[in-house]
Image 1 (cartoon, rainbow, N blue to C red):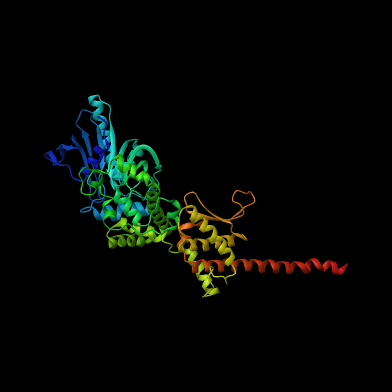
Image 2: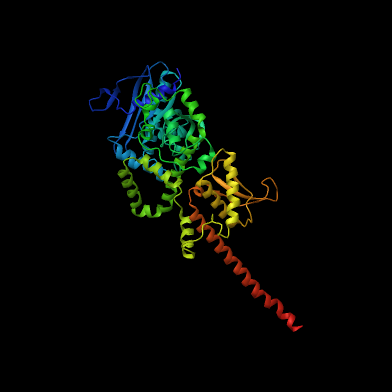
Length: 482
């Protein structure tokens, strides 16, 4: 009988328990483990690994229904004995460095079980059937070894293995099925090897809507989000979500109705999960930038681990960073513009004031943004004004003399100022600006950015004029001698 998703879920949950020893040899070596009944099927644990140094734990199960199917189950982050090793070493290492420190252990155990199961199959004359499963960190190791050894399997709220460095694991495919809950942070943080199936319950949609997420790409781009804190965020990651009669969602998350609900709100869920993945990518980039210092001293890694200890939960730290980045905390470039603007004028006339020299350009941009709002059934507000100011700055920097239209990229992530008819070959299009950053940047800061643009353009004009003045005497000299 083919293993069902519910069977993989039951095994991924059971692997959190150590198998009970049934018989030992005189030297203490385990000969057999006691069989277990999971989801109405009996299994015989045939191998177990436990490395306290790395936190790696796994169990291989043989199905006792005549199929002899072997399932290798990798244990996820353990919240008691292995908490420090798993969360602060392995999980942080995966997110920041892109490396799974339990990888060698997982590889050795997988290789051992494959050899053991294959030898037995050859001995008794049946085709070997080996697959993998796991939850959380265990799901990562299942994806890793499914790729390396050509195995099939199913995972639950796994941290995607395709985001790990140096392994060449591709994203996507059908070899593994990765089941995830919509609001789970861990499974959202990294791309997966295999097909991702997303499930949502009404609480997920309510939490996302309450935090400012929408099923409109435009509204997601220009509306601020809040962190999904509290009970729902922590419980969304639990293995119990995928089990029947559980304390988290009541019934198993693995229903067509829950999958359909996630599909119905795919834009909202995709925006939320995309933010989490981008936050993880930023953390990895920051690590790569500082890697020479880290390799020399190890101080930065220790600092990250200490910070995670203080928060009590790595997942919360990742989400907090996503929200902090998205909420328009000005990046280094913006801070540089702001500092330069302060040196020019500490209290400038704002861009949206009639006395500002670029007020007309702002008004044109605002009108275009308001038309964009109307197209999407949105009431203009301060975020519209902020976006218009950012568009005006981008238009001026690109050399546009007016703004006739504002258009968004397909995903709403970028906004473009257009001079002329967007469909005309003679149109002028300014370079894109990040929509989310623009709407969360106050008009005051856009005004400072406009001052910087004007200052730079004035400098260019002065340089051109000086060049012309130098060139004119050189051209007139010969004429005087004729």
